[in-house]
Picture 1 (cartoon, rainbow, N blue to C red):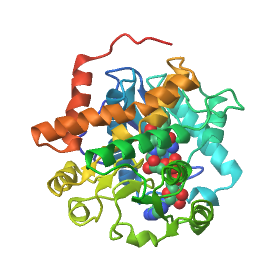
Picture 2 (cartoon, rainbow, N blue to C red):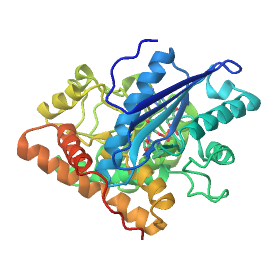
Picture 3 (tube, rainbow, N blue to C red):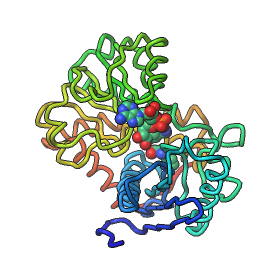
Picture 4 (spheres, rainbow, N blue to C red):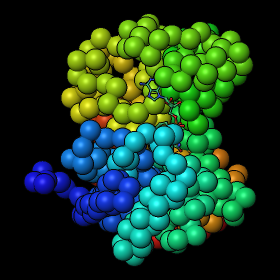
Length: 354
Ligand code: NAI
Ligand code: PHE
Protein backbone atom coordinates (compact mmCIF):
# COMPACT_ATOMS: atom_id res chain seq x y z
CA UNK A 1 0.00 0.00 0.00
CA UNK A 2 1.45 3.41 -0.98
CA UNK A 3 1.01 5.78 1.95
CA UNK A 4 0.57 9.51 1.48
CA UNK A 5 2.96 11.87 3.25
CA UNK A 6 2.27 12.63 6.90
CA UNK A 7 3.81 15.04 9.40
CA UNK A 8 3.58 12.46 12.22
CA UNK A 9 6.34 10.30 13.71
CA UNK A 10 5.23 6.73 13.13
CA UNK A 11 2.40 4.61 11.75
CA UNK A 12 2.16 0.92 12.61
CA UNK A 13 -0.17 -1.27 10.55
CA UNK A 14 -0.83 -4.94 11.28
CA UNK A 15 -3.30 -7.50 10.04
CA UNK A 16 -4.70 -10.44 11.97
CA UNK A 17 -5.72 -13.16 9.50
CA UNK A 18 -7.60 -15.10 12.21
CA UNK A 19 -10.17 -12.36 12.82
CA UNK A 20 -9.74 -10.29 9.66
CA UNK A 21 -9.12 -7.14 11.76
CA UNK A 22 -6.55 -4.49 10.82
CA UNK A 23 -4.71 -2.59 13.56
CA UNK A 24 -3.38 0.90 12.94
CA UNK A 25 -1.54 3.02 15.49
CA UNK A 26 -0.61 6.58 14.58
CA UNK A 27 2.00 8.27 16.77
CA UNK A 28 1.78 11.87 15.66
CA UNK A 29 4.05 13.60 18.15
CA UNK A 30 6.03 12.80 21.28
CA UNK A 31 7.31 16.40 21.54
CA UNK A 32 5.49 17.15 24.83
CA UNK A 33 5.59 13.60 26.23
CA UNK A 34 4.63 10.02 25.35
CA UNK A 35 1.83 9.93 22.78
CA UNK A 36 -1.69 9.17 23.92
CA UNK A 37 -5.16 8.89 22.43
CA UNK A 38 -8.00 6.42 22.41
CA UNK A 39 -8.73 3.21 20.50
CA UNK A 40 -11.45 3.58 17.87
CA UNK A 41 -12.98 0.25 16.79
CA UNK A 42 -15.33 0.30 13.82
CA UNK A 43 -15.83 -0.92 10.28
CA UNK A 44 -13.90 1.00 7.58
CA UNK A 45 -14.20 0.95 3.80
CA UNK A 46 -10.62 -0.30 3.60
CA UNK A 47 -7.28 -0.23 5.36
CA UNK A 48 -6.28 3.02 3.62
CA UNK A 49 -9.30 4.72 5.21
CA UNK A 50 -8.36 3.31 8.62
CA UNK A 51 -4.78 4.60 8.27
CA UNK A 52 -6.00 8.04 7.21
CA UNK A 53 -8.44 8.19 10.14
CA UNK A 54 -5.84 7.08 12.71
CA UNK A 55 -3.37 9.68 11.45
CA UNK A 56 -5.88 12.53 11.38
CA UNK A 57 -7.17 11.64 14.85
CA UNK A 58 -3.61 11.32 16.19
CA UNK A 59 -2.80 14.81 14.91
CA UNK A 60 -5.88 16.16 16.70
CA UNK A 61 -4.66 14.54 19.93
CA UNK A 62 -1.33 16.41 19.64
CA UNK A 63 -3.21 19.70 19.39
CA UNK A 64 -5.61 18.69 22.18
CA UNK A 65 -2.83 17.85 24.65
CA UNK A 66 -0.93 21.04 23.79
CA UNK A 67 -4.01 23.29 24.02
CA UNK A 68 -4.98 21.73 27.36
CA UNK A 69 -1.46 22.11 28.75
CA UNK A 70 -1.08 18.36 29.31
CA UNK A 71 2.42 16.81 29.24
CA UNK A 72 1.55 14.25 26.56
CA UNK A 73 1.98 13.79 22.86
CA UNK A 74 -0.69 12.80 20.36
CA UNK A 75 -1.53 9.36 19.04
CA UNK A 76 -4.52 7.23 18.17
CA UNK A 77 -5.36 3.60 17.50
CA UNK A 78 -7.84 2.43 14.93
CA UNK A 79 -9.05 -1.15 14.76
CA UNK A 80 -10.76 -1.77 11.43
CA UNK A 81 -13.23 -4.47 12.38
CA UNK A 82 -14.31 -7.32 10.11
CA UNK A 83 -17.96 -6.65 11.10
CA UNK A 84 -19.79 -4.15 13.33
CA UNK A 85 -18.78 -4.48 16.98
CA UNK A 86 -22.29 -5.61 18.00
CA UNK A 87 -22.04 -8.56 15.60
CA UNK A 88 -18.69 -9.87 16.89
CA UNK A 89 -18.80 -12.80 19.32
CA UNK A 90 -16.91 -12.54 22.61
CA UNK A 91 -14.09 -14.86 21.51
CA UNK A 92 -13.39 -12.78 18.39
CA UNK A 93 -13.46 -9.50 20.32
CA UNK A 94 -11.10 -10.88 22.97
CA UNK A 95 -8.71 -12.13 20.31
CA UNK A 96 -8.79 -8.61 18.80
CA UNK A 97 -8.02 -7.01 22.17
CA UNK A 98 -5.13 -9.46 22.69
CA UNK A 99 -3.64 -8.54 19.30
CA UNK A 100 -4.06 -4.83 20.05
CA UNK A 101 -2.30 -5.25 23.42
CA UNK A 102 0.59 -7.04 21.72
CA UNK A 103 0.97 -4.11 19.32
CA UNK A 104 0.85 -1.62 22.20
CA UNK A 105 3.60 -3.56 23.95
CA UNK A 106 5.78 -3.37 20.84
CA UNK A 107 5.67 0.43 21.13
CA UNK A 108 7.05 0.12 24.64
CA UNK A 109 5.22 3.06 26.26
CA UNK A 110 5.79 5.61 23.50
CA UNK A 111 2.03 5.40 23.03
CA UNK A 112 -0.68 4.82 25.67
CA UNK A 113 -4.24 4.13 24.63
CA UNK A 114 -7.66 4.74 26.21
CA UNK A 115 -11.34 4.49 25.27
CA UNK A 116 -12.87 6.03 22.15
CA UNK A 117 -15.76 5.27 19.81
CA UNK A 118 -16.35 1.50 19.88
CA UNK A 119 -14.36 0.81 23.05
CA UNK A 120 -15.22 1.28 26.72
CA UNK A 121 -13.74 1.21 30.21
CA UNK A 122 -14.55 -2.52 30.31
CA UNK A 123 -12.33 -3.05 27.25
CA UNK A 124 -9.57 -1.02 28.93
CA UNK A 125 -9.87 -3.40 31.91
CA UNK A 126 -9.17 -6.33 29.59
CA UNK A 127 -6.28 -4.54 27.84
CA UNK A 128 -4.79 -3.62 31.22
CA UNK A 129 -4.36 -7.32 32.04
CA UNK A 130 -2.17 -7.60 28.92
CA UNK A 131 -0.26 -4.31 28.74
CA UNK A 132 0.59 -1.40 31.08
CA UNK A 133 0.03 1.14 28.28
CA UNK A 134 -3.65 1.83 28.97
CA UNK A 135 -5.64 4.70 30.49
CA UNK A 136 -9.31 4.66 31.44
CA UNK A 137 -9.95 1.42 33.31
CA UNK A 138 -13.25 1.22 35.17
CA UNK A 139 -13.40 2.41 38.77
CA UNK A 140 -14.12 -1.21 39.80
CA UNK A 141 -10.78 -2.26 38.28
CA UNK A 142 -8.93 0.57 40.04
CA UNK A 143 -9.03 3.08 37.18
CA UNK A 144 -10.54 6.58 36.94
CA UNK A 145 -13.68 5.39 35.11
CA UNK A 146 -15.30 6.78 32.01
CA UNK A 147 -13.91 9.98 30.50
CA UNK A 148 -17.31 10.90 29.08
CA UNK A 149 -18.74 12.92 32.02
CA UNK A 150 -15.71 15.25 32.03
CA UNK A 151 -15.79 15.54 28.26
CA UNK A 152 -19.44 16.58 28.55
CA UNK A 153 -18.64 19.11 31.27
CA UNK A 154 -15.95 20.69 29.10
CA UNK A 155 -18.26 20.78 26.09
CA UNK A 156 -20.91 22.50 28.17
CA UNK A 157 -18.34 25.08 29.31
CA UNK A 158 -17.55 25.61 25.61
CA UNK A 159 -21.24 26.10 24.85
CA UNK A 160 -21.57 28.72 27.59
CA UNK A 161 -18.50 30.67 26.43
CA UNK A 162 -19.55 30.32 22.78
CA UNK A 163 -23.00 31.69 23.58
CA UNK A 164 -21.44 34.68 25.36
CA UNK A 165 -19.04 35.27 22.47
CA UNK A 166 -22.01 35.32 20.08
CA UNK A 167 -23.64 38.02 22.19
CA UNK A 168 -26.46 35.80 23.44
CA UNK A 169 -27.66 36.05 27.00
CA UNK A 170 -27.05 32.59 28.47
CA UNK A 171 -28.29 29.14 27.45
CA UNK A 172 -31.75 29.59 28.94
CA UNK A 173 -34.39 29.58 26.22
CA UNK A 174 -31.94 28.77 23.40
CA UNK A 175 -32.59 25.96 20.92
CA UNK A 176 -29.77 23.45 21.53
CA UNK A 177 -29.47 20.70 18.90
CA UNK A 178 -27.48 17.66 20.09
CA UNK A 179 -26.38 15.18 17.41
CA UNK A 180 -25.45 11.81 18.99
CA UNK A 181 -26.80 10.79 22.37
CA UNK A 182 -24.01 8.43 23.38
CA UNK A 183 -21.85 8.63 26.49
CA UNK A 184 -20.96 12.32 25.95
CA UNK A 185 -23.97 13.67 24.04
CA UNK A 186 -26.55 12.39 26.52
CA UNK A 187 -24.71 14.12 29.36
CA UNK A 188 -24.33 17.41 27.45
CA UNK A 189 -28.06 17.30 26.69
CA UNK A 190 -28.78 16.95 30.42
CA UNK A 191 -26.52 19.88 31.30
CA UNK A 192 -28.11 22.05 28.60
CA UNK A 193 -31.62 21.12 29.73
CA UNK A 194 -30.71 21.94 33.31
CA UNK A 195 -29.56 25.39 32.13
CA UNK A 196 -32.96 25.98 30.52
CA UNK A 197 -32.07 25.12 26.91
CA UNK A 198 -34.79 23.85 24.58
CA UNK A 199 -33.46 20.49 23.47
CA UNK A 200 -33.62 19.15 19.93
CA UNK A 201 -31.94 15.74 19.55
CA UNK A 202 -31.08 13.11 16.99
CA UNK A 203 -29.36 9.72 17.02
CA UNK A 204 -29.24 6.73 14.69
CA UNK A 205 -30.39 4.71 17.70
CA UNK A 206 -34.11 5.53 18.18
CA UNK A 207 -34.09 4.23 21.78
CA UNK A 208 -31.63 6.98 22.76
CA UNK A 209 -33.90 9.62 21.23
CA UNK A 210 -36.92 8.26 23.09
CA UNK A 211 -34.97 8.32 26.36
CA UNK A 212 -34.01 11.99 25.81
CA UNK A 213 -37.57 12.89 24.90
CA UNK A 214 -38.89 11.19 28.05
CA UNK A 215 -36.21 12.52 30.41
CA UNK A 216 -35.66 16.02 29.04
CA UNK A 217 -38.75 16.76 26.98
CA UNK A 218 -36.48 16.94 23.93
CA UNK A 219 -37.87 17.25 20.42
CA UNK A 220 -36.59 14.42 18.22
CA UNK A 221 -35.59 15.05 14.60
CA UNK A 222 -34.37 12.76 11.79
CA UNK A 223 -30.61 12.24 11.59
CA UNK A 224 -30.65 13.65 8.06
CA UNK A 225 -32.05 16.99 9.27
CA UNK A 226 -29.15 17.93 11.53
CA UNK A 227 -27.65 20.39 9.05
CA UNK A 228 -30.91 21.99 7.98
CA UNK A 229 -32.78 22.38 11.26
CA UNK A 230 -32.53 25.96 12.58
CA UNK A 231 -31.12 26.19 16.10
CA UNK A 232 -29.07 28.54 18.26
CA UNK A 233 -26.40 26.05 19.34
CA UNK A 234 -25.35 22.99 17.35
CA UNK A 235 -23.66 20.32 19.50
CA UNK A 236 -22.13 17.54 17.36
CA UNK A 237 -21.42 14.49 19.53
CA UNK A 238 -21.41 11.67 16.96
CA UNK A 239 -18.48 11.09 14.59
CA UNK A 240 -16.38 13.63 12.68
CA UNK A 241 -16.57 15.20 9.24
CA UNK A 242 -20.00 16.80 9.65
CA UNK A 243 -18.88 20.23 8.42
CA UNK A 244 -17.24 20.75 5.03
CA UNK A 245 -16.88 24.15 3.36
CA UNK A 246 -20.18 23.38 1.59
CA UNK A 247 -22.20 22.41 4.67
CA UNK A 248 -20.57 25.18 6.75
CA UNK A 249 -21.93 27.62 4.18
CA UNK A 250 -25.54 26.76 4.96
CA UNK A 251 -25.75 25.30 8.49
CA UNK A 252 -28.45 27.41 10.21
CA UNK A 253 -27.09 28.07 13.70
CA UNK A 254 -25.24 30.75 15.70
CA UNK A 255 -22.82 28.69 17.82
CA UNK A 256 -21.18 25.30 17.23
CA UNK A 257 -19.57 23.49 20.17
CA UNK A 258 -19.43 19.72 20.46
CA UNK A 259 -17.41 16.63 21.32
CA UNK A 260 -16.91 14.97 17.94
CA UNK A 261 -13.22 14.76 17.03
CA UNK A 262 -12.30 16.15 13.59
CA UNK A 263 -15.69 17.75 13.13
CA UNK A 264 -14.46 19.84 10.17
CA UNK A 265 -13.32 18.13 6.98
CA UNK A 266 -10.63 20.82 6.66
CA UNK A 267 -9.61 24.25 7.91
CA UNK A 268 -11.40 25.96 5.01
CA UNK A 269 -14.71 25.06 6.70
CA UNK A 270 -13.62 27.10 9.75
CA UNK A 271 -12.98 30.09 7.53
CA UNK A 272 -16.46 29.76 6.01
CA UNK A 273 -17.97 29.71 9.52
CA UNK A 274 -15.95 32.81 10.48
CA UNK A 275 -17.14 34.74 7.44
CA UNK A 276 -20.74 33.82 8.28
CA UNK A 277 -20.30 35.09 11.86
CA UNK A 278 -20.87 31.65 13.39
CA UNK A 279 -18.98 31.12 16.64
CA UNK A 280 -17.14 27.80 16.38
CA UNK A 281 -15.44 26.24 19.42
CA UNK A 282 -12.58 24.15 17.91
CA UNK A 283 -13.24 20.49 18.66
CA UNK A 284 -9.82 19.70 20.11
CA UNK A 285 -10.24 22.47 22.69
CA UNK A 286 -13.93 21.93 23.52
CA UNK A 287 -13.62 18.15 23.98
CA UNK A 288 -10.44 18.09 26.09
CA UNK A 289 -12.25 17.16 29.33
CA UNK A 290 -11.78 13.42 28.72
CA UNK A 291 -8.04 13.81 28.20
CA UNK A 292 -7.82 16.07 31.26
CA UNK A 293 -9.62 13.38 33.28
CA UNK A 294 -7.44 10.48 32.11
CA UNK A 295 -4.07 12.21 32.13
CA UNK A 296 -4.92 14.23 35.24
CA UNK A 297 -5.91 11.20 37.27
CA UNK A 298 -3.42 8.67 35.89
CA UNK A 299 -0.30 10.69 35.13
CA UNK A 300 -0.50 13.88 37.19
CA UNK A 301 -2.12 12.49 40.35
CA UNK A 302 -5.00 15.02 40.36
CA UNK A 303 -8.08 14.25 42.43
CA UNK A 304 -11.62 14.52 41.07
CA UNK A 305 -12.03 18.14 42.26
CA UNK A 306 -8.85 19.24 40.48
CA UNK A 307 -9.92 17.46 37.29
CA UNK A 308 -13.33 19.16 37.44
CA UNK A 309 -11.75 22.60 37.95
CA UNK A 310 -9.29 22.07 35.08
CA UNK A 311 -12.10 20.87 32.85
CA UNK A 312 -14.23 23.93 33.60
CA UNK A 313 -11.18 26.00 32.63
CA UNK A 314 -11.70 24.78 29.04
CA UNK A 315 -14.08 27.76 28.95
CA UNK A 316 -11.25 30.19 29.83
CA UNK A 317 -8.96 28.67 27.20
CA UNK A 318 -11.69 29.12 24.61
CA UNK A 319 -12.40 32.69 25.64
CA UNK A 320 -8.72 33.48 24.95
CA UNK A 321 -8.93 31.77 21.55
CA UNK A 322 -12.10 33.66 20.61
CA UNK A 323 -10.45 36.97 21.60
CA UNK A 324 -7.33 36.19 19.54
CA UNK A 325 -9.44 35.19 16.51
CA UNK A 326 -11.45 38.42 16.78
CA UNK A 327 -8.36 40.60 17.23
CA UNK A 328 -6.58 39.16 14.19
CA UNK A 329 -9.52 38.42 11.90
CA UNK A 330 -8.67 34.75 11.73
CA UNK A 331 -10.80 31.67 12.27
CA UNK A 332 -11.04 30.17 15.74
CA UNK A 333 -9.32 27.05 14.39
CA UNK A 334 -6.38 29.15 13.18
CA UNK A 335 -6.22 30.88 16.58
CA UNK A 336 -6.36 27.58 18.49
CA UNK A 337 -3.81 26.07 16.11
CA UNK A 338 -1.27 28.80 16.68
CA UNK A 339 -1.73 28.62 20.47
CA UNK A 340 -1.05 24.87 20.31
CA UNK A 341 1.91 25.46 17.96
CA UNK A 342 3.45 27.91 20.46
CA UNK A 343 3.17 25.31 23.24
CA UNK A 344 4.74 22.68 20.99
CA UNK A 345 7.56 25.01 20.01
CA UNK A 346 8.31 25.70 23.68
CA UNK A 347 8.59 21.95 24.26
CA UNK A 348 8.08 19.97 27.44
CA UNK A 349 7.88 21.95 30.66
CA UNK A 350 8.12 20.81 34.26
CA UNK A 351 4.72 19.70 35.54
CA UNK A 352 3.47 19.97 39.08
CA UNK A 353 1.71 16.89 40.42
CA UNK A 354 -0.96 17.99 42.90
P1 NAI B 1 -20.57 7.03 21.76
O1 NAI B 1 -20.22 5.95 20.79
O2 NAI B 1 -20.96 6.69 23.15
O3 NAI B 1 -21.76 7.94 21.17
C1 NAI B 1 -21.88 8.31 19.83
C2 NAI B 1 -23.38 8.42 19.54
O4 NAI B 1 -23.56 8.95 18.23
C3 NAI B 1 -24.12 7.07 19.56
O5 NAI B 1 -25.29 7.18 20.34
C4 NAI B 1 -24.43 6.81 18.10
O6 NAI B 1 -25.62 6.04 17.91
C5 NAI B 1 -24.58 8.23 17.58
N1 NAI B 1 -24.41 8.41 16.16
C6 NAI B 1 -23.48 7.85 15.33
N2 NAI B 1 -23.64 8.30 14.08
C7 NAI B 1 -24.68 9.18 14.11
C8 NAI B 1 -25.31 10.00 13.15
N3 NAI B 1 -24.93 10.00 11.85
N4 NAI B 1 -26.33 10.79 13.53
C9 NAI B 1 -26.75 10.81 14.82
N5 NAI B 1 -26.19 10.04 15.78
C10 NAI B 1 -25.16 9.25 15.43
O7 NAI B 1 -19.32 8.03 21.74
P2 NAI B 1 -18.96 9.17 22.80
O8 NAI B 1 -17.96 8.63 23.75
O9 NAI B 1 -20.20 9.80 23.28
O10 NAI B 1 -18.17 10.19 21.87
C11 NAI B 1 -18.85 11.04 20.95
C12 NAI B 1 -17.84 11.81 20.13
O11 NAI B 1 -17.01 12.58 21.00
C13 NAI B 1 -16.87 10.93 19.32
O12 NAI B 1 -16.58 11.57 18.11
C14 NAI B 1 -15.61 10.88 20.20
O13 NAI B 1 -14.43 10.68 19.46
C15 NAI B 1 -15.63 12.26 20.80
N6 NAI B 1 -14.93 12.36 22.07
C16 NAI B 1 -15.27 11.54 23.10
C17 NAI B 1 -14.60 11.64 24.32
C18 NAI B 1 -14.97 10.80 25.50
O14 NAI B 1 -14.43 11.05 26.59
N7 NAI B 1 -15.86 9.83 25.36
C19 NAI B 1 -13.52 12.62 24.50
C20 NAI B 1 -13.30 13.48 23.36
C21 NAI B 1 -13.97 13.32 22.18
N1 PHE C 1 -10.75 9.31 23.13
C1 PHE C 1 -10.93 10.45 23.97
C2 PHE C 1 -10.42 11.72 23.29
O1 PHE C 1 -10.42 11.81 22.09
C3 PHE C 1 -10.41 10.22 25.40
C4 PHE C 1 -8.92 9.97 25.52
C5 PHE C 1 -8.07 11.00 25.82
C6 PHE C 1 -8.38 8.67 25.42
C7 PHE C 1 -6.69 10.79 26.01
C8 PHE C 1 -7.02 8.45 25.60
C9 PHE C 1 -6.19 9.51 25.90
O2 PHE C 1 -10.10 12.73 23.90
